[in-house]
Image (cartoon, rainbow, N blue to C red; front, side):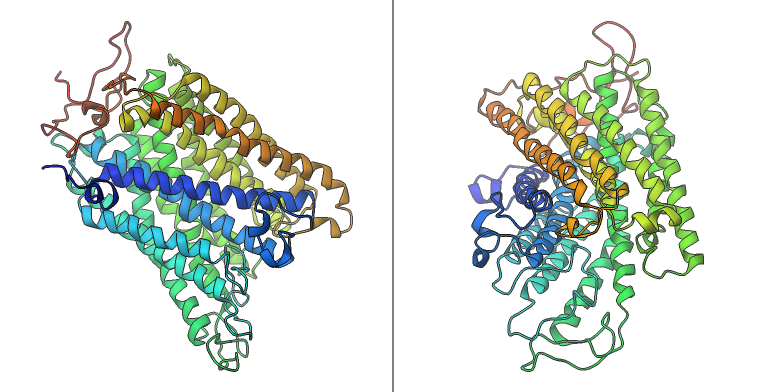
Length: 575
């Protein structure tokens, strides 16, 4: 299979899974900067309410000169949540690392459906562009929160053209849903159909298992949210009233600004939204778990403890993850019997997660780690994931969740799992597989400096949010100090905001590291970590088509141990 020669077919509209993976990597990095800027603007408002926001500046709301408004604050956290989940973490883990690694790790030459793979990326591009465009519409951006609860999200204002930002947000969500769904079809089909000879299910690396299980979640749950977004678009644009109660339906395209009465159910959207959006947490965490498992084994020079229980626990997470969405609705008037069922299933899902944590600790026990940057970030993932998981265990209990549900504690819990968890796994994966992607190793000194500062500052930002929540600070409120008894929390918010600003600035060490390494001469090391899995059987970076000869797998993925320099056996080596 010859590589395409033209620039457009090779780098822009490529069918090569590796190029598409790198495109997703650049795409996610761009939106990480955009979503991070919105997060800093949110923190600025909470530390110094109603002051000018220099992080976003005049572009925030030109008519206000960059000064925060109540509506502007709501738009900020709506788009921050949307961008970071749908356009950063999911495309980064599944689109970037999933695309690049999956065929290489199973011995395939490409994805099962290369053209669908291309379509999945180029559908995500307009989805992200429309989400950003919704921020700048003259009538105001999406201001219903990233959960878009009706009837607030479905009622268009009477002024002509108003509510366009919310409509654009829904269109963006729809395109992202279609993109991720066809991507998931590709991942699942690739793992099922294109494994190399000898690559049985029990010889798959845990990274591949995690990507496969994530694709199953996407295939089952994501179409529900995508269809729900279409129904909400219909409510807004033609006044259908699927979610909007009687006498509240407004058709933004009618001359009078009012539509017919309908008897929709606002809670229907909550069920459809959370049926996917809680399993989406596992879509973001499962690939992180798989990649961290591989990094700990390679850099700890020890087989993963309990390979089969690790795989089984992922499968249990997928199944139970489909039955826990209702814990987001404990305060919505949910039937007590249903609330109890959701509470028990949410508590139960902590068991497979605990299996993984104990297996990671057992993998580390007696290992011989090199203490390089990839290993340190993987251990950092384990530490932060445990903290986030423990606070999630409290919130699974209905009596605890009801008073804490709308507080800053939930914000701290979620960010510990998603940022503290998934992003540290991304840092570990980047250092581990960067030599495979580029032929160059990232600088270890800059990498360790980046890790230490990012780990400490992450704790300073998100751990203290738990304290704010226990003290009663509400989330999604632009000025919490108007509530009686909360004025004393301002110094803590100022400290968190300064830590967040420093955390953002600290990422310059990662940027400098990547740029510096890319400008260096390629080392051309085929397998710098002495790893055993199939992606290290190809040159670095891999050529078009990946393998000169189809590999034949003869053993499992984690045969490490012994003494001396030769402490591993590759998957293709005979007995």
